[in-house]
Image 1: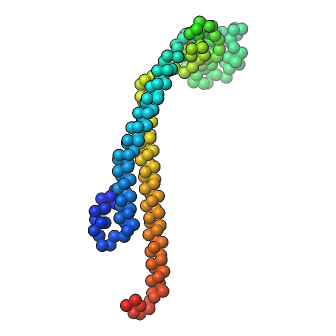
Image 2: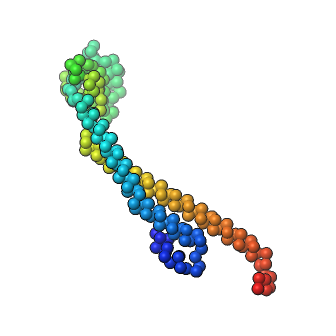
Image 3: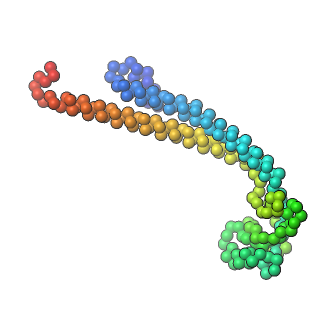
Length: 203
């Protein structure tokens, strides 16, 4: 910001170096990109993400169905063996595997191991799950509100990433300018050093 504010002063200062003016212009361009290009990039990314996620949400809402699952007795022959084996090791988990039976949207009865957030389940308890068109358990469908929230986060993240990229490039360019400035200063001192300390040298 100091380089941007001092841009006008550097333009008419007899002590300015070429790299001083170039550094100020680089800072001004970076500021404009951060204030204009980064938000626009975030808006475009958020809009595209929102459109894509809304289509995904509508598709999932059409092809994912809520059904009721009933908990089976782990000792029941109909209960999957995996559920009986996992029952003893699931006590300290947040989601517990339980053997259950449910009917898919096509009317086909199914059994399997499902996970539930309930701390206690007993045979005969019911809970809701989501299945696909073939009756296989799936995650709940994405809602339009969730899609919008994800799109907003994607837009903000893209804008911040773009701003960080611009600032990183600016720092690299300025660092390179400083290195060139030091190299020129070293060469100037090397040329002046040949006559350093000699009376009347260069006069």
